[in-house]
Image (cartoon, rainbow, N blue to C red; front, side, top):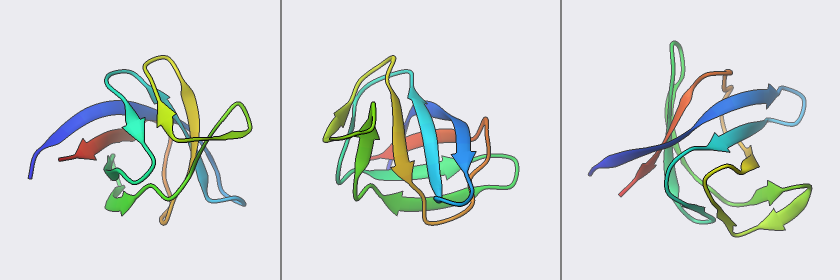
Amino acid sequence: MSETRIGTVTHYFTHLHVATVKIADGELHTGDMIHIKGHTSDFMQKISSMELEHEAADVAKPGDNVGIEMLEYTREHDSVYVVH
């Protein structure tokens, strides 16, 4: 199993369990398995849905800020990897 860094968490909305992820490299798709890794975060989850500009999206590209519902608490500056 390999991983590719795709972006960084820029904000986490605690009450919604949603993280804003800034996509830096590659594309992120609904259904992708991601790995969140940071100072105290380290978990994997499948992306069930994403929002881009408050609308449902299936793909996020470099430069996009996408909202993703998280299964666990996530922190700003955590790295986001796509698991292949």
